[in-house]
View (cartoon, rainbow, N blue to C red):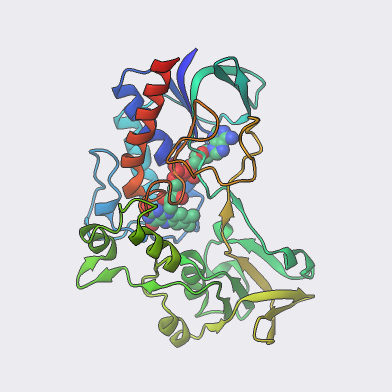
Length: 350
Ligand SMILES: Cc1cc2nc3c(=O)[nH]c(=O)nc-3n(C[C@H](O)[C@H](O)[C@H](O)COP(=O)(O)OP(=O)(O)OC[C@H]3O[C@@H](n4cnc5c(N)ncnc54)[C@H](O)[C@@H]3O)c2cc1C
């Protein structure tokens, strides 16, 4: 029987594996994808991270090249793989967990190929960005309109020149995609809730450097300051701010509220005909495999600082698990330390 089964081998799961190995625990990391870093390889082709390389360190392993530069998704994927190899983390790739349930004091995980694993404890490191979400009206769209989600976006060549493209959702991905499409297409960017847009560089430094210096990055999630940031939910948008988008010809629209045939309707009553839609409204986690009675499956799992309502079942890599840095690369080691400590304590108590 394993001491700990880590489900998910992204940066969070690999970091947990590394720390469990250091503590001498009998652990295994399971990951559905074929290679370490694949999550990043499968994100939009031209993705640039919004955190500079200095904030992409994994344990003692810094990224190669200029620490002040912003890596591509592919580059960070290779860094994750380097971390996995360098630390000789015990991972089984191309393996998906399809069901996790209780067995006495521990857990049984059922794999896609029908085999099972027994473990005293489990860390859920499957990430919160697994299944793209769509507004309810998305299904009303005409079959002639081409639809993709942000992670399927390659580059402006994806659509024939001069198409009308609706980009729905103005988070970091939506803004970056709208900008990429702008030269060759007529782009409508539907904005969601009002968020504070911050540049990536402020007075010559990565905005995350400033957030760290003034203590905002790691402020505990229930502190007053963290509650204020949570409410304002700032996003670094690099050059994809409203002014730049408008200058490049992107038509900024308010929230999309409905679709009829090939027309998107916006909250100000206006509507636009589109040939294609890129859905950038976010993701949700897939909890279908969790068959644990005390876990409310649809509910966000991250309310107890890495613990869940199921004794021995822990979670990492979720927004605001402990602080703003949780779910970001730079917060991964701190949260992994906390969760692995909880795991080790739990094993001792068993
Ligand atoms: C578009 C985008 C851009 C981002 N840019 C940045 C950035 O610039 N800087 C930054 O710090 N953060 C960024 N983030 C946030 C964050 O760093 C990532 O979401 C990160 O991938 C989270 O790491 P993770 O290990 O927790 O989860 P993931 O990287 O999502 O890894 C989860 C792993 O679990 C596996 N898995 C899932 N279900 C199962 C199962 N049932 N069985 C087995 N394996 C399973 C998956 O194959 C996957 O490998 C970005 C996020 C997105 C979506």
